[in-house]
Amino acid sequence: MVESLQPADIRILAALQEDGRLSNADLAEKVGMSASSCWRRVRALEEAGAIERPGVRLNPEACGLTFQAIVHVSLVRHEMRPVEDFIRAVRARPEVQECYATTGQADYHLRVLCRDLAAYNAFLEEFLFRQPAVASAQTNMVLRAVKTRGVLPL
Image 1 (cartoon, one colour):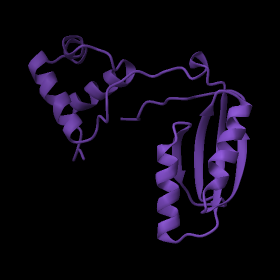
Image 2 (spheres, helix red, strand yellow; image 1 turned 180 degrees about the vertical axis):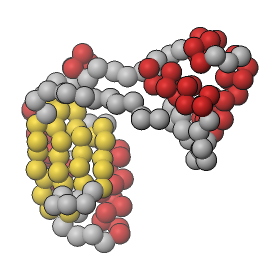
Image 3 (cartoon, one colour; image 1 turned 45 degrees about the horizontal axis):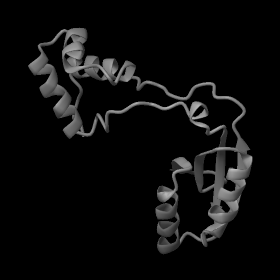
Image 4 (tube, one colour; image 1 turned 135 degrees about the vertical axis):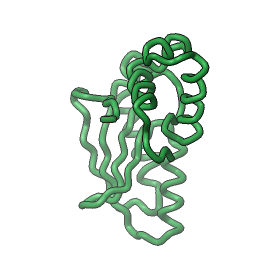
C-alpha cells in the first residue's frame, strides 16, 4: 500500500491510466522526469500495489461477447464453508468479470459476460443454480454501456 502519493506518482498514474502502453521513455517525457527516475517510481508503485498489472483492455462486443448482465445473488446460508465455496467457484468462471459482496437485499453482485442469451442461460443452469449456497439470482440485462472504465480520481 502506498502511504501517500507524491505529485510525481500522481502524474505517472494519471498518464498510465490514459495509456498503459506508454514506453518508459515516453512516460518519463510526459511526466517531466528522467527515464531512470520514472522507471524506479513505476517499480515502487507496482511493489506497493498501486499498479496492479499492465495490460490491454479488450472490447467484449468486438470479441463476440454480446450479452452482459448484472446478477444479484442471494445466498441460502452464510456459514463460512458454503460462502468460501461459492466465492472460489465464482472466481474460477471466466464469464464472471467482477464480483462484489454488498449490503442490501442481495449478498453478491456479479457482472457477467457471455456470447449470447443462450450462453447466459447455460451459465445459470449449469453453474450458478448448482451452487449449494445460492438461494436466488435476479438478472438485470445491460442494454448499453454508458461508462465502462473510469480513471481513479487522484
